[in-house]
Length: 291
Image (cartoon, rainbow, N blue to C red; front, side, top):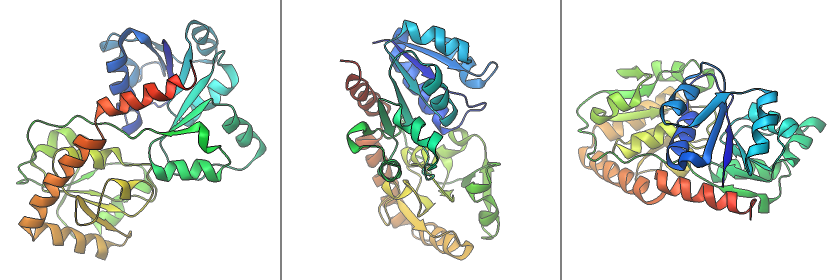
C-alpha cells in the first residue's frame, strides 16, 4: 500500500519525530509532503523518502498516485479535507477540545479514520462527535537504548517556547534544572526528567525519558497518566511549584525508589511503546480503510 504523508509543521517536535520513525520503516511505500526547507523534509530525504514541498497543488497531484493519505497535524488535516483525491486518516496528538463550529464539524467528519495517540485524545474525539468505530489508539513508539541512564547527571526539562509547557513553573521550584533542546544527548546521564504542561496528548519527551530509565515527574493532564504511573515509573503532580518540588525530592532522596522506577520505565516502553508496535498499529488502521 502506497501512502502519502502530510505534515505542515515548520520544526521538529514530537509529532515530526514519530512521522520520521514511521517513514524510516515504510520504505518505498511512503511519500511525504512537508514545508520547503523544513527539517522534516530534509531528514525524510536523507532516509531516501520521496519528499516534496507541501501545497494544495502537490496534494491534488500526489494523492492521485497513492491509495491513502495520512495527515500528521491540524493544518494538513484541513488541506486533505479540501484537496485529497483518496481517503485519508488523521493522527490526533493533542488533547485540546475540538472546536464546535460548522466548519470544524465538517472537517472532522471527513477522515476515514483517526489515529489517537492516547485514551485521553480518544475521549476528546468522542466528545466532539467522532464515532468510536472510526478511532484507533496508536501510541508513540521510541527506541529502547541498549543501556539505561547512569542517573549521575542533571535534572532535565525540555527547553520550549511553548507557554503551555511550564517552564516558568519549573524555574520557581528552586531546583537546579538543566533545560535542553537535545534530550537524547543528556538522557544517558539524567537523574530525573520534569515534564510540566497544561495539556498533553501523550508526552513523547516523557516517553523518551522512560526509555532511558529516567524517572519522570509530570503534570496530571491529558495522556501523561497513561505512561507516568505514580510510584511505578514516576510521579504525577498538579501544576504548583511546591508539588513539583516535593515530588522531585521524593525521587532524588530515595535511591531504591528511583532504581525501581527506572527499571519499570524501561519495561513499560519495551512492552507497549516501541516503534515496531507503533508501525503495526498504524498499518492495522490503514487496512481498515484500504481493503
